[in-house]
Image 1 (cartoon, rainbow, N blue to C red):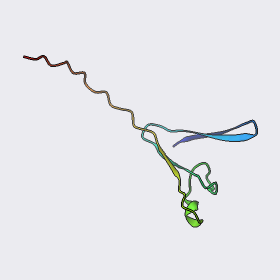
Image 2 (cartoon, helix red, strand yellow):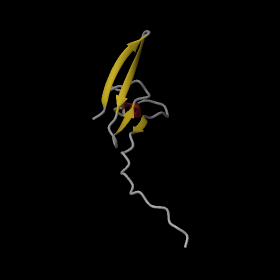
Image 3 (cartoon, rainbow, N blue to C red):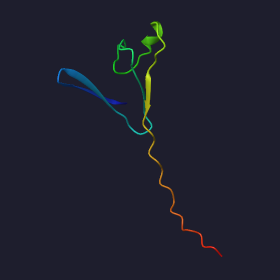
Image 4 (cartoon, rainbow, N blue to C red):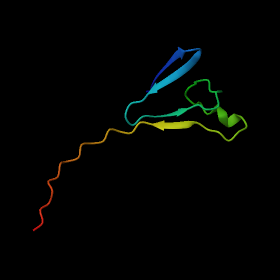
Length: 73
């Protein structure tokens, strides 16, 4: 589950979303979502061609085995 916090600075509210590796969220861009800053797909009921911003945290890469350089021969 994403960790969402909000903070006010200079009269503006900022929203911060922290994701775990492999986690994906849809962020609202229509400002009509009841779960803002997350998208609840309410934009589909309104005119416009906008949709959510999809953000995905990449899974941590699995360590690759170290390979020795091959020798010509």
